[in-house]
Length: 399
View 1 (cartoon, rainbow, N blue to C red):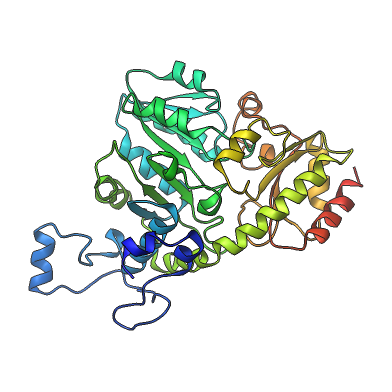
View 2 (spheres, rainbow, N blue to C red; view 1 turned 120 degrees about the vertical axis):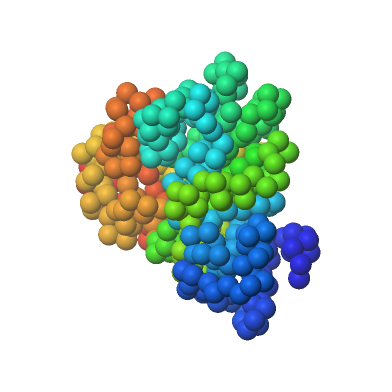
């Protein structure tokens, strides 16, 4: 089946189907564990003539396993091109360094993953690239922040960890009317819940470590593109000019693991979304919980926007138990759920954002992001919902 016919399939079929390996006819793609490849005179001449992706040059420049994963990601993102990277942060870094140069300006949502926020606020400033942080759910605030040198508007589909949702069409129109590229981190949603490229976003980055891999056993990232304002070969440009030079390609084994993860993405995330919705309802009715953040709740500030943009509301939620001591006591008491740093796996994981991922962000900035000391973030897993609620019920009873 060629790519045009694959694109006509529904999401579940696109996620599962991959062409058999040409050499072996293996149903699942083989892992090509090679850092170097042998040339002959014809291959060498093609390399000299500039045929880079068509031949295997060197592991840092690309690998057949990596290319197979990129093709699968293109299918589920609805993209025209994809670039695989060593991690989610590598995807973000390669994208922004490929788009920006000294003197450029970014408009970014206040609430973004802590490492993204720190890179924009403290690292890119070393290269004379400035960022203005605003609430991207407020289109007027975004409009007011744009400067003549603004090149990128950056936000997350579902913000980490406040679960804020920005309305995409007004952001895209505002940006494209001024030639500004729109970049969206879709990690919290995954392509099963939301495909921002279908809403006009130019570039989508994913930490594939999370829902794409889905089993807390692999690290990787992806950059997917479908844009009317960027050159068709933009991702190939940044493959060679940025990713290869920075040394951040995805390893062959991780590419194979992530491609395997894609095959079960829809069934995993469907169940995880169901569990997250039931947990959110449970927390909203609990007398020891002062606040719950989940786009599927009618009490969520952007619930109507989320309902228009997402058929599902995701597997991520957060709730507040008043202070850090209470939060730590709850998480330390849990037995079924895992107290851990990551998310998106088959097991429910929890963390205290203010004391973990966002610990190095100054408190006033954390509060601007909506991150309180008592906030607990949950990535819903595949456990039985009754067992999950019983686990949290016991933990909450101790505060």
